[in-house]
Amino acid sequence: MEKEKKIQERTVINRQKIIVAAKELFNTKGYFNTNTKEIAKLAGVSTGSFYNYFPDKLEVFQEIMTIHINKNYSDLAELIKKLDERPELARDSLSDYIRTGMAAAYKSMVLFQNYESIAMTKPELRDRVNDVSNKIMTALYTFCKESPHVKKRISPLVMSQMSYFLVQGISEYLAKLPEDVDKSDYEEQLVEIAHWYLFGN
Image (cartoon, rainbow, N blue to C red; front, side, top):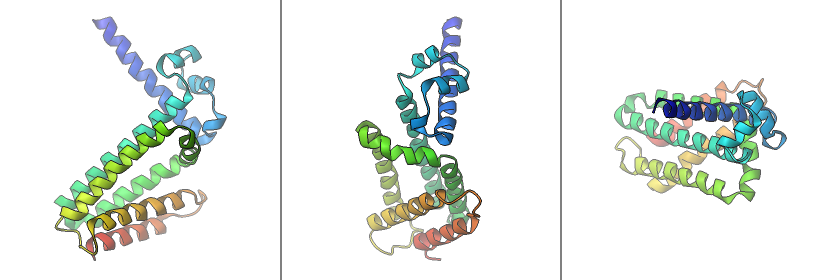
């Protein structure tokens, strides 16, 4: 029993090492310029061991994207909870959410750029991402429809979609700006616009 537990723990640890190593390489060299041998070396496991955990680098990429989009959903759910429970802190909550999201986008810019090319040939990956995106849109729609704090400008469906594309679109744009560009003013303006659009002040 103890031996089996240690094997399970080692499996979890090694899988995590591979995921972390792959993410670093995908974000520096790009997915297409990275091979499994490099991932295994950076993760501190043998190439043979790599294949005990993942059949190929695509499966690692899909795991990374799944973790990322699920984190996006949980972060949004947490934001919605804060906006509902503490509307007086809405601006601060939006600021934390946007800045955290932007920081993640900066670090994963190359990985996101590769995603579009990979998803074109791997519909199962696109479906996985779309499923979570739909959950995000549903959560936003429910919030815009039911929250007493949201200013009802137009239909909840339009408001939820506009809010999502506002933040998502600007975030993608900012992530592509050179690293030496100060993005803080952009982020502050995005917070102000999102706050005004949802809450009207």
